[in-house]
Length: 318
Image (cartoon, rainbow, N blue to C red; front, side, top):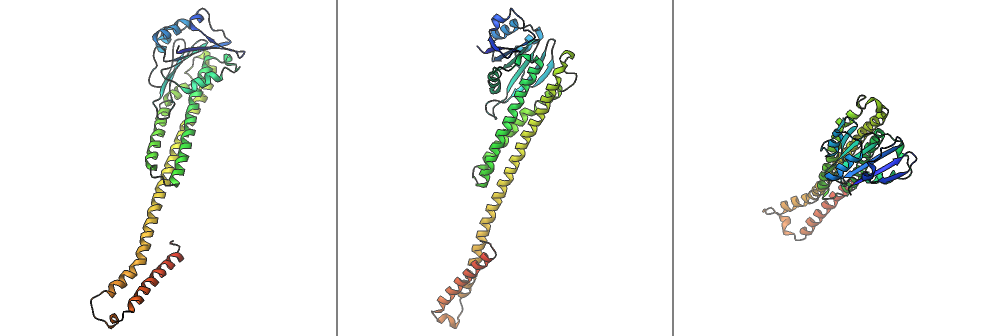
């Protein structure tokens, strides 16, 4: 069964109900019925329609999940569609449809959304969820949705910190890891940016009907939290740019160290090469008749090399 119905009461008690048996009663004012549909079949959708007092417009809405974020007011309720992050940050987002009506709320998705299952368990701990109006429950679900983006930002920041350590260790595969991380961050940014219009719609003073206007503040708060979540994702992106700067600085430093070593080797060997070239010129000089002068020349070459090394140490080139 891919549909789970939870009836929450104002006294903190919660009961799993069978929608087939629930159609004979209505939700009381001190109760809230949450129907969570995970990839429901057509028959299961029809069972939801029969169990809850909803209009034909709401019935058509619950029959399928739109692929893009949206928020609209219907004849007997409100429909909000968001894109939820999957188990992996680089996975395709899962459309989540939230329908609210008179005393009931429906969440429908076609794939697993971890935070829905987690919060379904957490609200069954004597919390007085039944005191919430459907609008307030909608705000709670959207808060869970925004929390997932904050958790994603924390995870991305931790991974960027690991890349910082790799940059200081001069990891040879770091560039590929940086590119992969950039794509992950860009993917999450695109998902959260797709909700800008929805957040603006929910924050409009005239979005909710007059009878449900008391829940507007909660929706406005959710919109503001979504903006802060977007800033947190952007901060992870700025951190990644800093990591790339560290990588480029370390690369430049390694290049400088290599060039300094090659330059020092040239400085040490060049005087000896010049001296050897002069002594090897094809002309007659009397000193060439002295065999012992060979060792003198070798000594001079060694002395020049030691002098070059001494100067390099004094100037702190080594």
